[in-house]
Image 1 (cartoon, rainbow, N blue to C red):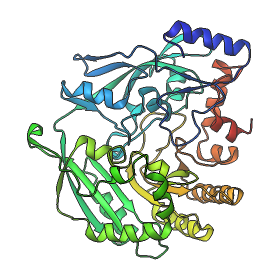
Image 2 (image 1 turned 60 degrees about the horizontal axis):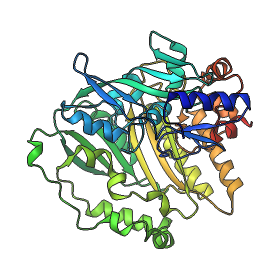
Image 3 (image 1 turned 180 degrees about the vertical axis):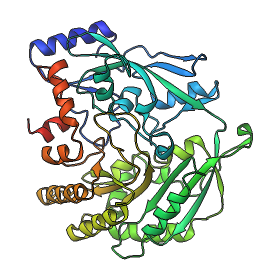
Length: 432
């Protein structure tokens, strides 16, 4: 692995001269195959640097720094990142390459909107500074470009004030998706974070959902101590025990668990830390992916708000028709993304649903066809999938959802004519 830019440039030259395909990896926290390749380059051994500018409240950090390292650094300046993804272990380069978002995407959009500039090494070994004013074509395509155009080395991005490390969260129990969407829509102005857990294991009109609304809490953070749950999921679902949980976790046991959780969850307002609010899975289910015997597909869709209810209902019907049930589903609210990124997940105000669907060992082709039908249904409603997740999709469906992706391919011919930068996802979709 390279230790500095000169060694990285040498690797780029060697791979280009031998037409060897390779990919770039951050911290390997993607759900899908968007960073996998026969050869992988990591910047883990590069120097880790971060600095803060009091002039414009921005930070400049090396691309291998993790989101959590940035947050810890910013606390002393009473600042935080405007966008915090669902895991703290994502690197800055990975966050940009996937244009990540968080539970406040209806307020602050995706992380790309807060990037001032970045330095990138393209396959020729040249290092370019990209911003909204310099090398614009790369700026708007590298963000969300899955590392297909070059290696991000350094990033400068905006921060936002950290008024408190605590947040008031209220859980509201609802009995159907329509109520949840309407209440969420009416709560956008008073909320800083908004998410709903949806039970999609039943195909009935009544579907239990839990809407979590969070806003800043003004109490002194130093006096706050988080209370531990009496039932420690992290201990039960640890590295040693997950193989036993695989046996008991199925559609029926999760249906019972969801019912119990829905009925027993207290609705009183509670106080959560910034970490508890954003990193529930990191804290309580660190080995979540191990719960699925054959792995799982993380399928995330976004639909314009006038079409979302109908689309989500049709998706659930198709899931039950094919018996590809979502073991966990999360609903989020989005606003239109301001910048013209080529890979623009949120082009309109809308709703997003994420589905965790176990992989089928014996019916892989049938399950693949199921996802293609889901994609066609989504296209019919003007929606699109989030490519950073593990979505099976054809090239034709990709161009229907993301017409400007074709421009990214043109840029790839310009900056990577030998197409040495490649990933399993890119080759799978493009049939290379």
